[in-house]
Each structure stands twice: as C-alpha cells, then as structure tokens.
Length: 319
Ligand code: SF4
Image (tube, rainbow, N blue to C red; front, side):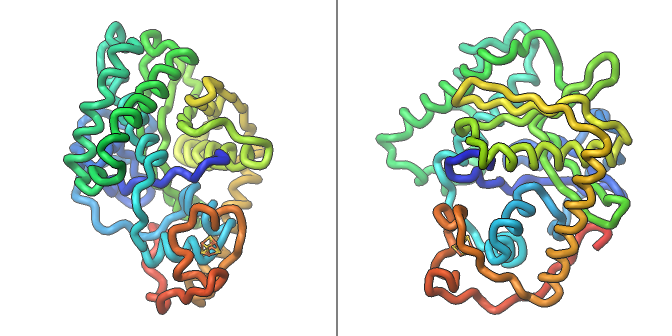
C-alpha cells in the first residue's frame, strides 16, 4: 500500500488464536492451516479454530484511520465488502507463488520453474474464492497471468533464493503490546541469519514509491519491526522492501530508540481509534485515498450518508 497505484487490498486470511499475548501462524491464501512447524520467532502457538477476530491495529488499518477515519470505520467496524481489484489480486497471487517457492527444494527455485506455478496458483485461488473468476473478462486473463509471471521472474533479478531458507513466509502475528495496543500484521518473509540477526522482507508488486509514499512503505515495515521487537526484544537488523515491478530493493536499518518512538506514535493512534470507537465519530476526510475508495456512495464528502453506527466491536486482546 505504499505506491502511487491503487492500494493493495488485504485478503481475509485465517489466523489461529494463541494463548493471551501472542499469536504466530503462517497462513496461506484462503486455506485454514494446521500448524506443525516450530514457531520461528518464539511466540506461543496453538491451532484451535479461530473465532471472529476482534479489532486490532494493523499497518493497513492504521493507514486508513490516518487518511480518513470514515474509511477506517467502513472497513474495520462495518466490514463492508469491497470488490477485488486485478492489481491487488495479482499481488496476492505473486506473494502466494513466492511463498510456495520456498517450500520446494533449493535447486527448484528457478525463474522458469517458479513462474510456471502461476496458473496453478491462480486456479486454486479461484477455487477458494469463486467470485475471482469474474474479476476480469475471460479474454484478459492470459495477459494478466503473464504480468504476474513477469513479476515473479523479476524477483530473481534481486535475490537468488537457492542460497537461503527463510525463517518464515507469510507470517501472521498478533501481539498484546505492553502499552495495551493490540497489534496485528502479516510479514511476507522473515530471514534469520546464523548469527541471530533478523531481516523483515516485504514484496511490493506495484512500482516503487515517490517521496510522498515512501514514508508509508516504511511505516508498514517499522510496524512489523515493532511487533518483532515486542515479541523478541530484538531490533531487526534490516527492513527490506522489494519492488518487483521496478526490480528495485530498498533497505533500512531501524534503531531501538526509533522503534520506541514509533511505538509511542502507534499508541497515540490507537487512543484516537479507541475514542472514535467509543463515540462513533468517524469524520470523512477527503484526500488521495478517495480516488480508490469503494464507499463514495456512503460518504458525506460525495453527497452520501454512512449507515447507522453499529457500535464498537470488541478489541483484541487488551482493549
Ligand atoms: S470517499 Fe474519501 S472521504 Fe469518503 S470515505 Fe472514502 S476515503 Fe473517506
């Protein structure tokens, strides 16, 4: 969600609740998983069926609230559906293919072998979510899949995945932050060096951001870094953004004091969210997000009227 293109939608992914405090589960697109691997970052894990998830702050929802409180409400509280967009779904498809690549032997992690997985991965996505089948005219699907294959091949110009195994891919984390802020996020990839250093990697299928948007990309990675810091007490040594469309990667090294300052900012934002949940006051704020907003018909800025406020849902876990 850090590019000048339409923000990537977040897919509803399953998450298994752990005992109070931490959840660490590697999910896959639309498939309820049974966790059998060891938790790579030290959280407490179980595989009990997930209840409806209470509210927590994620980078996407934090961005929504900062951009437009009404947009946050319509997405996080009212949970209004939004139609799938081809760029966002392509992002999910590419992420899925890259995740599955790391499940295969290193010698098979080649550009051709990986790109050829795109149609099968797409077929599974359509099986799991049949409305995706009508997202594009049938005549456009082949070219769209080719564009996904091109993004997959771009990845290999930036890294050679035959030479390392990630600690985790598509890692879902929920934490009960010590300052009472429930945090939730999905980390595309977590690398663990033999020396114990952690690297957080995020793939972007849109183009690299201009200066105005780079801060938003970094916000997301700092959010994940804060979650890892809260879990392990370790500051990740590197945050890495991989822009597949531009064949470009950006690295950033956070510091502990920076993450602590960031935690204060996230805490203040959560307080503002909590106050809005209490009062139901979620003002519309016209801005760049309006261009991609599916809820203009319900927005006072566009002559619409929001539905009655349904009340504050439960927050998770400490709210
Ligand atoms: S159209 Fe703009 S102002 Fe209205 S809810 Fe959407 S983002 Fe907010």
